[in-house]
Image 1 (cartoon, one colour):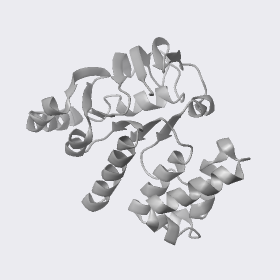
Image 2: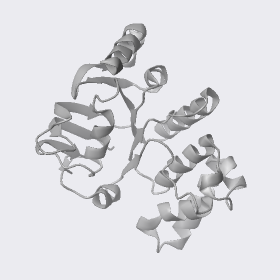
Image 3: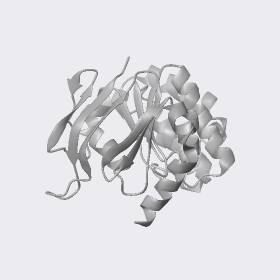
Image 4: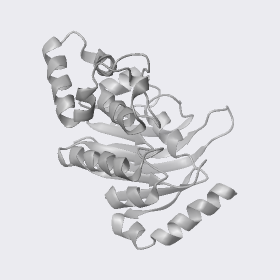
Length: 242
């Protein structure tokens, strides 16, 4: 089972300025791990570092016991880690099906596998099947998010990192996205979620971390956070104003 551990991670976007200040955490196999906290706390920075977009100058990141810091996103993806960024990560002028085919680039020579995963994707997302010839840029916000998720899951990752799965979505679509992620978790997918929607993140995550100023302010099982949800939301809102 996939297992991600991060120890004493220091990384940022500008040399000499760290966003993550010696951060450590663990993503347990077969679970949804949630990360919450105010804007600027370093939540998305962590995902970018794990996926190779940022190179830490201190600390370790181990996936299944193997160091992954310093590897390229392509190398990390081949190991079974998928990254779904905030918003719609699609090619707007290409049809839905072409976007899905681009998601299959790591096994582009395996036509049988491509046909199978495309068929399975349409079964999971009937709305995409109906609009498979439509340009991605013409999809609704919810459909575009579904396509972003589907495009990353066609590679059958063992760990999916999802940044802000509810951003810009209606409550109904947000429920659908989270229920889908929970279904994939039940099928064995390990998931790391970053979300400003604290209530949804707490509702669906078995274990959570709350970031503040690039460090872990609080961590614990779901019930620890659900018992203090009002205070956590208040602290996050205060943090955004500072």
